[in-house]
Image (cartoon, rainbow, N blue to C red):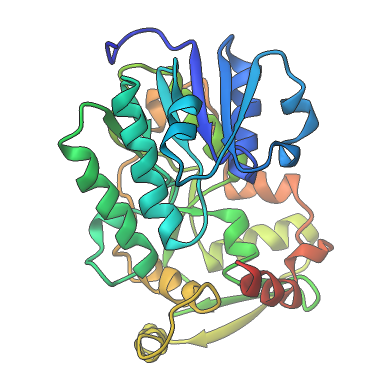
Length: 316
């Protein structure tokens, strides 16, 4: 199957996740393509998707080669939206890639959607090592890899990274607070992933960024939004944060401590993407931090408290 042929069928592995469902919805609303979803339990797919005449759901385990082949068969591009344990992210993706090879699917969008892990050394952020492994695994395959860099999902900044406490109306930061972050939103990421999937010439690394903003810059936007400056909590210097992650390396590195790793390699500038590819798809409007704050009430949102964050981290 030629890599540059028009796209009419898009397979999404991990369609029950937030980003997977958003991407499926975006594909259906912006194109005439059919969507083939792959998941363990189709009852977890939103009814609006599950009942759509242009959506087919294939149930199966990520480790099942036959189920994976059935899910990707007839598609022109496979989008992986897996998020979970190392075995899923590594071996689950390898099963999908092998299925793409067997079914002659020309392109595979890897489960990235994160900071620029290419600039990291192995072991810097352990969960990103697998992304490097998938890049290598794709190198000698006839299927072309697509690797989408989005920076930090801004919802993750507020929620999982724990930088905002709605109860205290308080913004936390490491180092000086002037260090820039690359930000994208879930919905904007889904739009760019869709645009790349629909573009048969899109291969290799693609970088999309809604905004570049520091903690101090966010504080000013919050003050503009609500008419009151947030309290600012200094968590420590960059060296303090480095010591924190070095101490973590001596024990089990799980999702509860991973925010320190993410934050360090963003704040030190190592994983920033540099120039982006936003202009390649002018039909997609980048969502800025100001736009996000206008669309979301971070002051009164119960999902933006540290109590919630602590609970969520333990479940991941």
